[in-house]
Image (tube, rainbow, N blue to C red; front, side, top):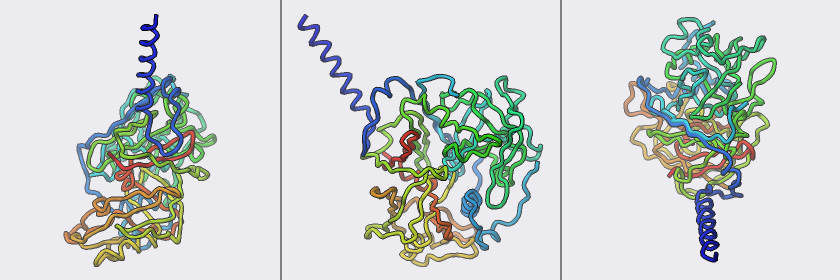
Length: 426
């Protein structure tokens, strides 16, 4: 009898040790172990694209300005040229999952596969918007070319919502809109949501048409900025939240390597040190945090006198900081200058010795952006001139921390607590 009791006690102790060792390394309060036992997680990995296209700093910059409705600088508008647009409830509890994420065009945009009504499509996971919209067979034929287009007629589970429409407006007009909105079964990395609202595009802007590697967006910001009318829709993330082992989505998007989004789980092997949790201001519907200081190389921490809040946005390529931060950084790069021929962006000799950049994420944590991530590309026709991956925000009053940040930091988006946690990649 004594031996039996001792054996049971040892087994219980072993299980407890295993649970504790598996808990995420957080700077704040740990997540509930009991909750992680009753529910699941899932993983969405990324893969390489078959047809990479030349990446463009100007395109990335214009995309960010349009997305957030900022006034486009004259130099950037002139560089853009012209282009006409084409007119034209979770199924099961205890879910977890992950999605392979594929770096498009040498990390310009991260794409991942999802399945809607049995049809698989490569999509941009975007924490800076809240619509799940798809290229569809309702688009003009010319706009469909090169894309995977969702066909509602081929889905036995698609149900149209009569009278509903959506329209995502950017600074230069509509980027995507449609009057075909419905619900369908959406599977991302093994997590399935039935009755998930999906929005079928009937008109998209030229920039989306040209990006044939992506077939729409999975918006992962807060549902309050979803554009469906007359009633805003719930995002996929909010739909599956109650069925996740942990109410989190993580982004592990290293430069040049396969990365992943994971839902409902924090993989301790993906980061080093402790996760640093930062409160989020979701009043505008974004993953918005405080970021009021910075440091260059091994220099002292400096206050960002503009002090604009920052949005963590997987749908933006560059790191767009307050102008005074960009000016301070490039003032220490020999021969760096604002180049009007390059849309008013900072350029520098490609053999320049760049320094690391440290930026505040929240009131206490400073994240280091490695200098290797701050040289975006060579200027076409000028092999000795390069464009920076960090640029000024033209006084917009908002900083946008895009993929440059995510290449540097493993990131945890906590839906329930409305926080973001950061740690360097392992």
